[in-house]
Amino acid sequence: MATHIAVLDETVINRIAAGEVVERPVSVVKELVENAIDAEATSVELDIENGGKKLIRIRDNGTGMSHDDAFLALERHATSKLRSEKDLVGVPTLGFRGEALASIASVSKLRLMTYDGIEDSGAVIVVEGGVLRKSERTGMARGTVVEVANLFYNVPVRRKFLKGPNVEAGHIQEMVTRFALAHPTVGILYREDGRIRLDAPAVRTTLERVHTLYSRDVRENLMQVDRTLDNVRVHGFVARPPYARSNMRSVLTFVNGRSVRDRLINAAVSKAFANLIERGRYPLAMLFLELPPDQVDVNVHPQKAEVRFVSSQLVFNLIVDGVYEALTGAPFTPPPGPKERILPKPPTTPVLQHVKDEREPEQFVPMEPAGEQASSPMALPLRPTPAPVSMQEPEGWFSALGIVGSLPGSFVILHSDDELVIMDHHAAHERVLFEELKAVENPGPGFECQDLLIPRVVEYPPVEARALAQHLELLERVGFRIEEFGQNDFVVKGVPSWIGDTDLERFFGSLIEVMLDTGLRGDPRRFREELLKSMACHAAVKGSKTLQPQEVRALLRDLDRLGAVEVCPHGRPFIIRMPFAEISKKMGRR
Ligand code: ADP
Ligand code: MG
Figure 1 (tube, rainbow, N blue to C red):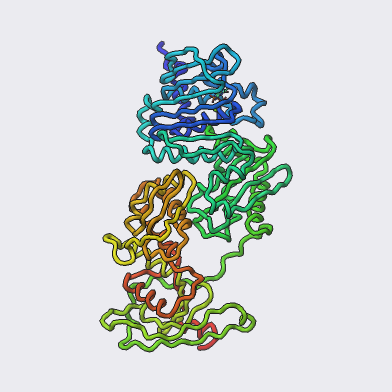
Figure 2: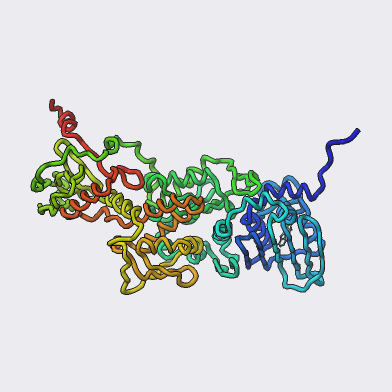
């Protein structure tokens, strides 16, 4: 009888395993850098070409391997890091499964060169698609070089799923950044197509490493986290809330030196920031968790990015407390429950019922500071100015509102015939700018570029700098002149007038986040829109500025002119309407 079941040959098994270990170029980089660090390298040099699809080469000065070990290393489940099952508890090394090299070799053309400094010579082994092609001796310095060429050349389905070189390189750069943070004492040099993208010399502390990796602006706003409870320690840095980002990728976490992406940790960080940043924004954080090896299982996922904690509640609370304390200097108190809010009516379609035949002179009601608060800086009531509105201009709902005055913060008090209207002028201005930016096909007034007297240099870490470099054209379209200048720097030579006195470094920083977050998902329309939103948000009049009455007038007119809806581009309402009738009722009047 014919048999249907056969033991798969080694090459096929390796290729199947490769599916689990190697998903894309960044997975190869991760495995190879881990191997270098496990081999006690103090210097790691990484080169990639065409997003790692053509070539990934990594050179380390670690222990190297003997000839025999070099051959063994390319076999599946060959590892020098684990001998028996009991070693599985608390593996001190980054790798331990002994399948990375074999898997990678089965789906690429791999060349391993290694020398342990003991034998007469080094070894060179060439494997193609899991098949040994060549082995010879070579002279080289102690250490290892692994070259992975044409990844997935023999697995076309996989290759097809790879993204463009920029996307793949972006993943790799993020991974390299994580390694750089986790291993400050290892010097890391990373080049893409011959161009240096990250150059982090060996230093002693994480803080020194942070200095190499992040811009001054971020560095100066980092708060130190350090808290220990029952053998578990969390330490690292979080950026103050204004430096929040638009995606969770900014939360870099490490467990016992291993870079992880863990839901529990992320949830804890989010909770600590819950009442400090808006929903949908994420903190910038680098957090290191140290705990006894038997308290954590790193063996959950083949790519070892997820972990499981024995005392997950303790870890969770520790992180929440540690981060919150760093931010506020106080232990965590849960955010207050949702407050009762007065929601605006459903979006107003142009409501013309308020149009008046004749504009009434603005009536300004001086607002009495309430009792004790008299000393607080209450904005002065606005003074009347005749509104220079041409009578032909169709009046909309907004323009017809009367101005009562302004409150400290970002609020302007307005009224219609039958409603009290509170407007957040920052959010409203944001909406106006957004509509204008969206409408810009041929840039009009306010969008032409004005040269800066003194060009301004802005600096970003490598991943960010790359994103910005790729989108300079859009910025030019809305009135900027900005050029690449050195490795991670840009020089801003001109700005449009709509930008006002916005801090440029922060402004571009927020755009970069959007680029990193949305750009990768590749929907160009959404991408553009997100960018414009972010521009509008940063260029909108600061909430703290008290608007002059004519400025309020102009804003109201703009809102009508652009047919703006009652929410800012992020979807928050910018006006609250309280019918007088409702106020009367609340006051017990009939
Ligand atoms: P693992 O890291 O899980 O042990 P790998 O397939 O990644 O499995 O590597 C197999 C073995 O090859 C390692 O256990 C180690 O002994 C050796 N090795 C791999 N890379 C290096 C390197 N860069 N320097 C020294 N030894 C290495
Ligand atoms: Mg390994």
